[in-house]
Image (tube, rainbow, N blue to C red):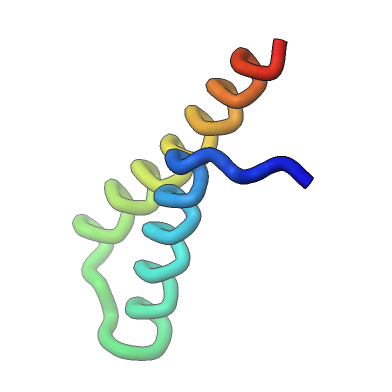
Length: 56
């Protein structure tokens, strides 16, 4: 099995930590949550794109 890219791992970790904090610890305001969620998703997508280019 291939090892996951560091960028993908950071994006997933960012998104999961933020979701857990928002759901179980304290509610994060939308003006903070939305940009961080978009950043996490962007890191995941960029990681997949870079890993596809490296595989070619």
